[in-house]
Length: 221
Image (cartoon, rainbow, N blue to C red; front, side, top):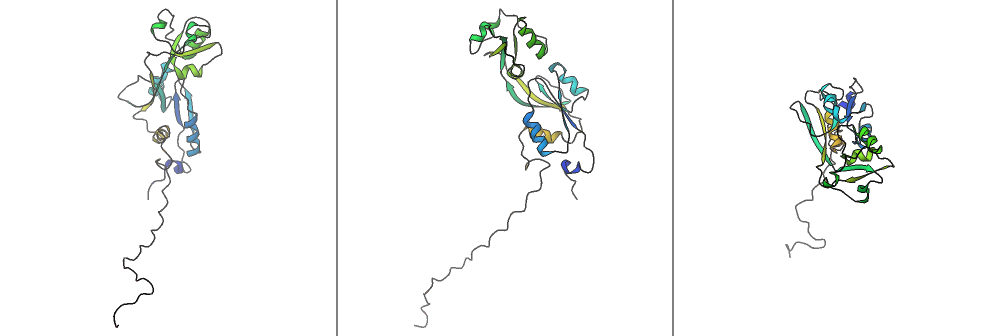
């Protein structure tokens, strides 16, 4: 007898909540919805993680998995790159850069480009007139305000979002969450229900040719 899939086994025993962290700018709405539809009885806890703490959150097992911003590499980690983010500069609405569709790094040479702050801190400093900040587009969108605008930085290197987890983490639902993030359908999921048996094939026609109606054999004439 085969073991029941985790979604069914949950009715017989407790499956730990899957804790998923994410750095600022990552939106999990779609993946949370698919999880709730596919595993309504299994808990999914979403935790905010500062980019500076993304490695600590994994090492100290504060989360089972984390959407991280690369670079982040270690032999103890599984890391799946997901997508790249365009770099933008966030400035005050009346800043000269706001007049252009995009700027270059050379355009920012005379600016006080803030560094070493969390995303929220940097955005607040820009709003206070302390300088400008170059961040991924997703962060600028998440912290958007009426008094600030952002413009793409054409020659700034993109950042990359990845999904990471410790190799020794034993949580049985990690693979299922990876499948959801990668767009795996329910039928291709490891917890998919067995496919229905195909309908029986129709009987094959006889290979023996039939005589046309109304014709008789020429024998006996």
